[in-house]
Length: 67
Image 1 (cartoon, rainbow, N blue to C red):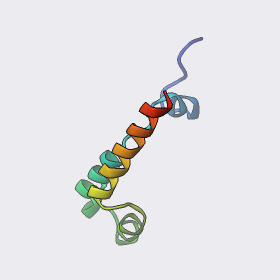
Image 2 (cartoon, helix red, strand yellow):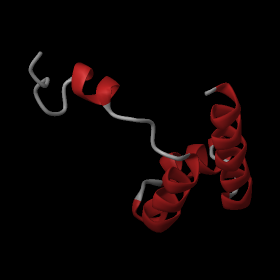
Image 3 (cartoon, one colour):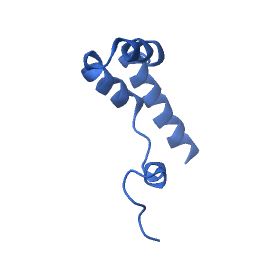
């Protein structure tokens, strides 16, 4: 089977999920560049970095137990 075209739905679905802490870090770095409405949504929806790192550790531990 050939690889799907880059940036298509199939391509995104094939990629492994990005750690939540990386997403939070990225939006903390570029958040000030976003419009105020987007900043408000990001602050409301994304957890603090410490919580995101804890979630990533818990998910990794869960996957280790499942395997």
